[in-house]
Amino acid sequence: MASNPSPRPERWTADSGHRDVVKLDIPADAYRERRFEVFVHLEVANPAGRADATHALRVLVDGALEWSRTVPTHVDGTDSLDLRLTRLVPVGRPLRLAASCELRGSQRVRLSISAEED
Image (cartoon, rainbow, N blue to C red; front, side, top):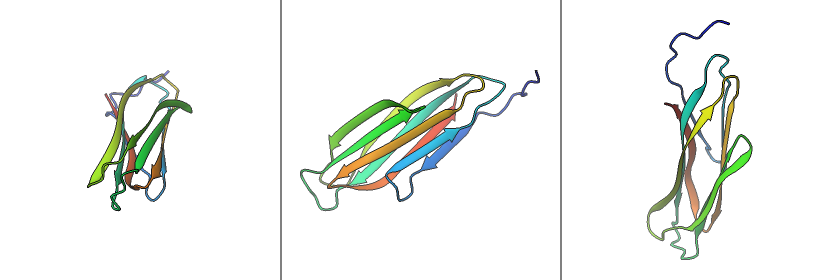
């Protein structure tokens, strides 16, 4: 079996654009195991100043629920939910990441996923 000579660490990013869902599919590597630091970021605003506004973030890793949280949205300025996790990806396996947000009385500013190889 041939080997992949000293590849540079991988860096992957995805942004939801105008959607409430973002997906990041990192293809398999046939030669080596990889370790990724994953960062999921949801930024929201509450321009109407609603006291009952909330925002929620749900993260799936390889199709399984990894993390979910719902919190009140600050009345002034922007607010966020962030998740940082590490994943070891075996040889020949892809890494599939998805994040979705649910908003009540708040507005999504940004929803993104990044994965950086250690």
